[in-house]
Amino acid sequence: MVLMVLRKAGAAAVAAGVVSFGLIGLVTMGTYAASGTAQQAANRSALSPGTVPAAYQDAIQKWGALCPEISPPMLAAQLYQESGFDPKARSGVGAQGMAQFMPGTWVTYGTDANGDGRKDVWDPYDAIASAAVYDCALAKDVSNVPGDPQANMLAAYNAGPYAVTSNRGIPPYKETQGYVRSIQAMARSFTAPTAPLEVSAQSAAAIYFAQTKLGTPYLWGGEGLPSQSGRFDCSGLTQAAYASVGITLPRVANDQWYAGPHPSRDQLRPGDLVFFATDLSDPRSIHHVGIYVGGGYMINAPHTGAVIRYDKIDTKEYIGATRVTSDGAQALPSRNTDGSVNAPSRPGSTAPASPAANQGGPPGGTQGGSQAVSARPAAAAPAAPTGPAPAGAGR
Image 1: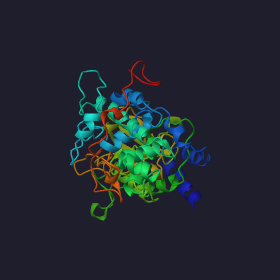
Image 2: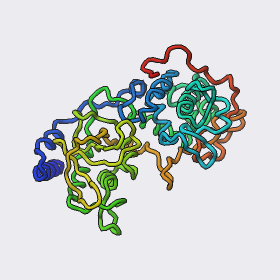
Image 3: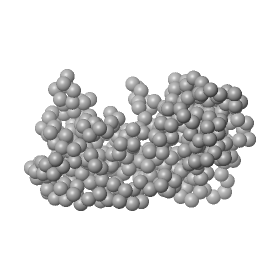
Image 4: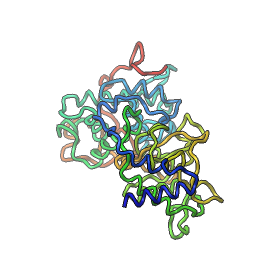
């Protein structure tokens, strides 16, 4: 079956002017050594280029080294899950800013990171720093709990430190277990690869699906539905191609960008998603996606008036690629109808006023927000860093 797919893919590539070796040779070179190193080692790495807006990269790199339990990729994953890096994000329950702080929690953990004399929840630099300060305070709260310190910290962020300490680890709440998995999986998308990436086992079949759509007219918003005469737009095609192999991608291209780690141009393999942006320093400007087939070509649904076809990837708007993984795709946040990120649900307060507050399981949820109002005293927050920035930090 796989050989049949590769033969068909190679023949189609030749017909489109792609050297057949570009596809067959690259796919059949074999599986590279897996990049799935231990979570802690992976998360201590630097940010992968192009994964966070350049304006925030130095701040995330700096504050992501505030304590051992966090990292720049993990902090970036949290901010993306909470707001999609939107400094003006506001949830229906009152959470505010890029890090989605509730006002009561901000009073305790808000940090003046840019030195303007104000702790402003709407300022992205203050929000980034405050998220790290808050994470590290939670890490201290659960430091005596056995297990993965980062996972315990994330569980405390979602369900509260008492839920973690009383359960001696991640509590048995579906929301909390999912949150920990999602953030740690998404952190791998934000981590600069330090080893060759494993080739996707589903890539050949995803390419074959896209090849069956060659010549289909483009439709903006198209998802291949019968009511749309089976037509697609760019991200509709990539979504459907990976759905055909059991991986659910989000609908829009700039969310699909985070569905796995990011191979460099010379590490591209058939099946990787390739992305294009109007501003190469800001992934929020991604506007187009295709499926790489080898030899510098992709299958894509280009634009209104065109058909699904092969095109070269090397243009001035090429921002990079993603090697789709199942856990990476599952970790991605959903979006509301207005396009804003739907922040993770919370099973209860992150800082119960007393142990009795969480006995018997979590209270009602705080859907759409970040932290519930904290009852911890201000002294619980670690001091902001003074002196030189941590290793790898920017200004």
